[in-house]
Amino acid sequence: MFSQLLTIRRDWTGLFLRLALGGAMWPHGAQKLLGWFGGYGFDGTMQFFTGTLHLPWLLGFLVIVIEFFGSLSLLLGWAIRLWAAALAVLVLGIVFTSHWQHGFFMNWFGTQKGEGYEYFLLMLGLAAALMANGSGRYSLDGLRQRGALQQQLV
View 1 (cartoon, rainbow, N blue to C red):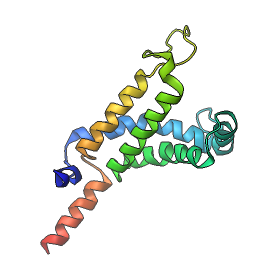
View 2 (cartoon, rainbow, N blue to C red):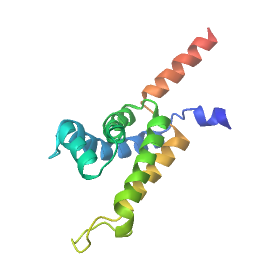
View 3 (cartoon, helix red, strand yellow):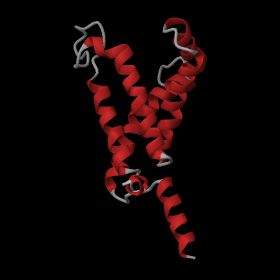
View 4 (cartoon, rainbow, N blue to C red):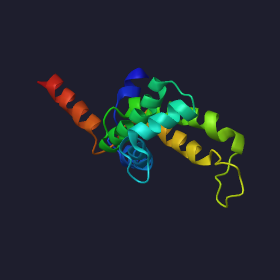
């Protein structure tokens, strides 16, 4: 069972899953770290996390690292299960601290006081599928696994 968990399937499923999750989350990380896409950058985001939300500095820092570097790693197919698990924990934290009280639905028409958790439920599903499936085709994990297998055969 454990060896199956570490096996990387060379299928299209993992590729599509990681491109969807990494592609959806990376711009949020770029907002927080670099200030791209209308974000506040590292300093502004950390000030919001620590000053307004009263998060410990380390937790705010980890949110930025997971969103930016975790998403980038998903796009490249590197350490997929680790980053998918980190994103799943992050998404659960976001839901229970900021979105649960607003119900299921997103605030499509501006009639709620905040956003629901449906978007995050989809992200959690993608992360869980990646943890089960692995990175799929065209991944750095797959290259690493093939290299290790070739060395065992020599």
